[in-house]
Length: 191
Image (tube, rainbow, N blue to C red; front, side):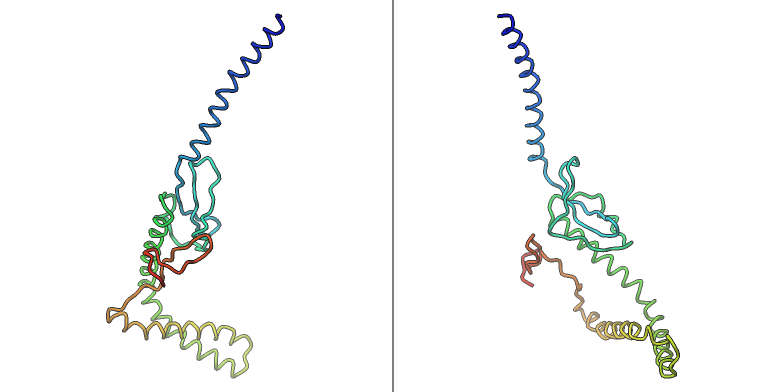
């Protein structure tokens, strides 16, 4: 009879230990379901991506809405480490920063491009003459330089349109699903 009493005491102790462990596991699962996911931009190995974070103790997952984009050393510091409640909110903030960053860089490049365009025009002419003279290695960059000059001239030709009030930003932020681009803007308008 004493053996049965000892067995009941051991079983009782195990139950007393198991109940708090079960409660803690259930509480952890509940917290995982209740703690909302947050969205953060991170730069990893020179690539900007939108990450889904869940409370900090689980592994972050990359969003399927915004893939990893190579950005090199571009400054996205205003977005990094900032949490967003929705993917749409995160993408709107990225769109705003991208628009501002692109315009700022373009404004800084305008005077430099004007200087470079004249030098490149001369350089292309010298490369063509060197090619005609059959000098080795003198025509390697002509196509690249000519492509840049064509781009620059097309940009200059489009500037009067912008001055007339038809300036539009060339990037359109799209609403994307895990299946891919839906073709709608974030405001729901069809492209």
